[in-house]
Length: 225
Image (tube, rainbow, N blue to C red):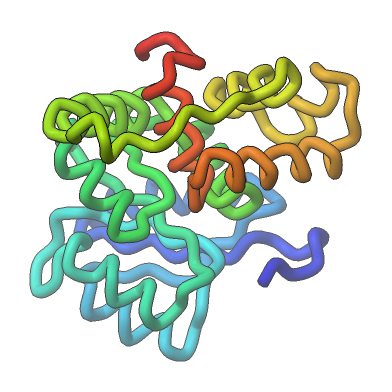
């Protein structure tokens, strides 16, 4: 549950590289709406931390000793289901990205991402649940193509008819626009945009924003990325 908007977003960094943690922490310390409340050097350390120090967002490195990020991810979700998790990696592995998103990751960033991208990912995951970028979009698209090859036609969902406004809003969501940006562009209130987004989920059977993006890709509402 989100706290008062005047309070900073509570962040924990879990990474076994001390210099990387220090660099990210220093960059984020310049942001008044973010507060790094703790650091962990492996998954086990992180799990012990969050039992007494729950965070809004965790930056979680995939490769760590003792317990890696992939093993820690579902355990964090069990302990703190509301916490948003951004995976950090040096690898661009589509099947791995899709697996992590299915396990509950809210975004996936390369460790070469600059501090502004990390900041934007933290804010977006906290406010809107997911942060999509070229890594996540390509992974979801690749996974979707592979699944479509093996899905019998009779198991495909029935066609859903979206009106022009719904299609426009879905396309803008795929372009990583925030609710406020979309509201300004289509001349509606943010609350109305959220209502249309919820209606889109019902219409398409998507359970999350990630599901809506996959629906848009599959039905060619957006061009392949």
